[in-house]
Image 1 (tube, rainbow, N blue to C red):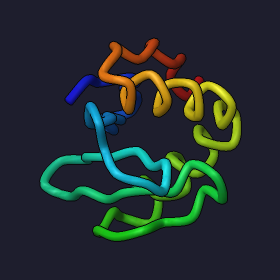
Image 2 (cartoon, helix red, strand yellow):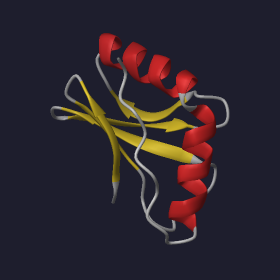
Image 3 (tube, rainbow, N blue to C red):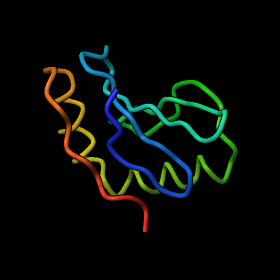
Length: 86
């Protein structure tokens, strides 16, 4: 599962050949969650509110890059890294 970004202890990953809808995986300490790339909604899991807010802010800034990264990973290609939240 390639790591595509990391910031403030939050790690963003994608799975190779993952299922639809397009989504990304987040881990923060012992917590984890999945977010939909198209509407940026939380799908499942549990993150602290502050971490969730940072992930949502980051995803809004990089939504088109997330789409491209998911497409690459779904085609079993290494996705590009995405800049962290400043």
